[in-house]
Image (tube, rainbow, N blue to C red; front, side, top):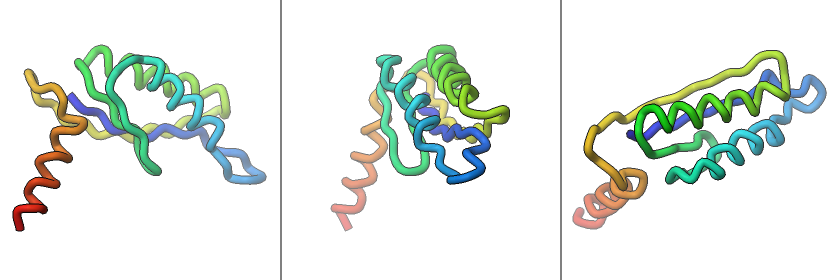
Length: 100
């Protein structure tokens, strides 16, 4: 399965900056050993249900250290028996674009 998620604290009232809290979450993801990719809006993780959601929980807990409230948004693509979809989906998209 692929899970794309975004997690953030309520933010610093003075600056609105959340980069340190987001960095703490991304560090958890990268240390998990699961395939992952981070862009400007979401971090996507690939793995089995229990392992992916355990990482999401740890990342959310890491962000909770930065404020009394945490926002979590996630989207999942659940395809049992499939692996390599973190890159495979993009490769198929690019192939389709190239064939036009």
